[in-house]
Length: 483
Image (tube, rainbow, N blue to C red; front, side, top):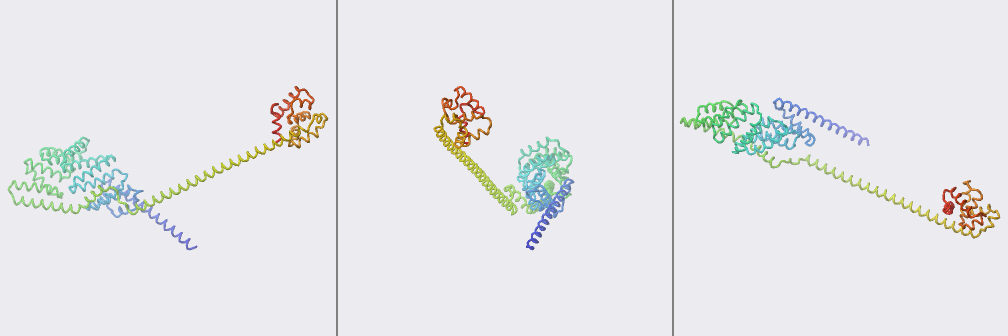
């Protein structure tokens, strides 16, 4: 018995330690997310992936889904910086599946996946992600990010040759009050729009309106200028912008544009060797892009799968939770069933008890009524017998005491009851006897030796003392006799 008590105490200590550790882990997780949020507002990425992973693991999906989603989002950002897009997408999707309450967070999650699609030239897929992102930024009133995403969408529409949609989105954006940054981006994207279907003069017009080329990325700006200048018969100026692209650590795609401009200029100058060299550089850049695409192709496949299957697959923890919920639901249903059953039984027992009580009362009442009827019948029989045995001489000879005694015995102590009231005289008691015996007026007149008129007055007076009327005096005496 002592061992069992020790075991239970030990078990309680272990459970309390687990709960304490769990609470501590959760507090640490909240602190990590708060720190990551603070750095993010300052434009700095929280880079401690170990702490972020511990934070993500410490939160429960159904209790802290927004905090868990934030930890997963920052993990995805870290892997995006490392160009490990497939792993980054895993974290973005895991965070988005939680459907966090923070609309801006959901916008950033989908926007980052759209950016990965854009990097892979999957503009159709990127447009799907942009259209998922925009409503979240609208809900969060995040105007700056909303404008950036809308401009990216306009660019993507150009890439899929849907110029009407690109034009519609761009016009909607330009109608708002843009700051210098977004105005420059809008002008640059409009130039790209015109370059896309060979309206190079219009492209140059909008490029000249760009106040801050860095808003587009200097590479993008230089690439669009190189294209527009080359095809407006200003190849020397185009070469200057092409060389400017190659001078910096530009993207492979912009380098391809630069090498193509230099190649075409070499052909104009009939410098075949340089043209071939530029052609080789273009192929080299394309090979680099293909290698990058091979490493990132899994990321695109995961995004496509997520769009096709937005619901998260059930984990073991989810299945256990569902099983527990189902068990509790069944248990609750059983409890409700038995409570209702017991309640119905209680109500039935109460109803049966009331019915039995009513039956007993009815039986008792019926029994009393039978007893009263029986006693009344006995009384009536006695009245008939006494009436036959009495004569006027019995009253005239003054034998009231003996007569009262005889009547009292036969009429259930009525005379005692009447005498105890001390409101009747001897003459009135004698009168009550003849009334009880139900004689007619002539007989009463003979017994009482009084006139008919006197009998009526006496009857009314006695009746008033008993609280009844003269007409009901006999019935009142009968009732008094059988009580």
